Image 1 (cartoon, rainbow, N blue to C red):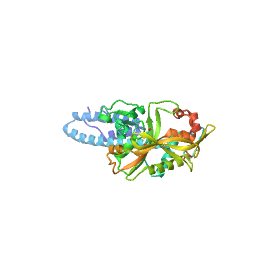
Image 2: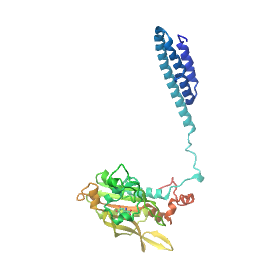
Image 3: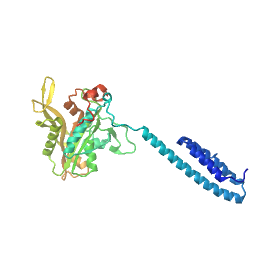
Length: 357
Ligand code: DAH
């Protein structure tokens, strides 16, 4: 066994090995060959035990310095190779955004997306902000807080998809379900923020139902305004303004028919004027009515359930079906086609993403 090692020579040898590695993979192999359990430097260090104490001390120190140097060289080489690899990737993945589009590969926006964007733009102009809630909800947010008493028949009207109970939660929060309406976001907004509130929520809703006019998943839009003096006149003004802008008509008759929802009092269904001729439908002043949404003044119990004082705060809410509005505005006859994913359908009813709004 040699009692001494030429450290300078060893350093040259190891540095050359490291510099010779041209990619990260071979550099890792080199690292193992040098510093690994059976690596070159490790082997040399093992010989320290056989040296006389004086030499061992000297060589020990020298080898430790060498080990630090080599580790440093390895790190630098790694960084260099990583930088080079990144540079090469950036070069390769360059996209020429000045290339003109390829019409045969032009995609379309789904009418639901287009409708949601149009609705959001109109309400944003009126000062509403967008709010979100989860698709997977619980009994509290979907029913109880919205003033559906336990065992109330309206709970069954919704044909709810229930999910297995959540073992980490208790009571109504454990009873999981797919939200049956976006009214859940009314509760979430009031629990999260203090009035004045002017919020809009849009998204997927679910009910176990399937025919010409029902799909198990559909989209709703919900509005909520809460303040100290908000009244039904504000509700009417807001909905009329929205309907006129959305359907692009200046004169639009609108009527409020008394209705029932557990979370509003009074409640109403809203119809807009239309005319039907030769199987066609035109929105605007005419001889007929078309139901478009549900609304009402938020029930004092709902306000209370969200920790607010109904003697201080009041407001209105409304909910509408996004597919229904899209079908009316764009003349799409069958609801089920929205979710069939037929490319010919989207080519026909979809929107150009560049020329939207
Ligand atoms: N959540 C109701 C539904 O799904 C729609 C609705 C009606 C929402 C009246 C409202 C409202 O906010 O005030 O049928």
